[in-house]
Length: 226
Image 1 (cartoon, rainbow, N blue to C red):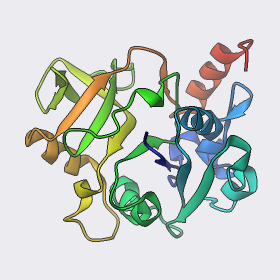
Image 2 (image 1 turned 90 degrees about the vertical axis):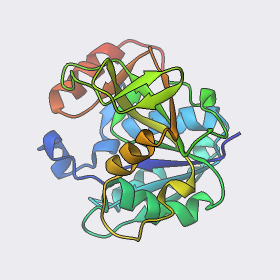
Image 3 (image 1 turned 180 degrees about the horizontal axis):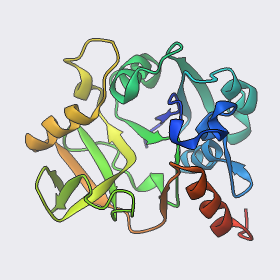
């Protein structure tokens, strides 16, 4: 059972302006709940007990809205990155001391909505990470990586899109110094070395990148049992 998870929540959400001028994107409401609460509920259901939320933009709003996590049976830690986000790689490295430096952990983007079951993730990925892939959405038609026989490949086609959900080993970032950097080139290098596995999620998945997509998600969730 994976007991630690990281929720990426430090970005400014510029494409979501003006909504994100006053509210961090993971704290926007979809289907009557904060986007981040959908994740917290699903992570708790999967057996996660410790959640790290990295913060920067309007960071003070997260503990005010979520507290210590006890209402979901979780313990939430906040990894503040300063006034400027450290990006995905720097944010993950900065959060490692809170995630348990010797064990695999889940990481999920705070600005997605999905019905993915986190309990299906492997506790011990065979390589450096295990990434969940989805069908290419209209805004990202060319995808990211090829998934073949449970392994990710950096090839031309047929590509799927990285869902922003994965299990990572701390060793993925072992050679990197603290600072501001993206995890994308690190993943690409590991994929070319055949060190990243993957799986295809065929259920619901939404990248909440614009106010229109948030409104569309709200419309789909309207009337559903909460």
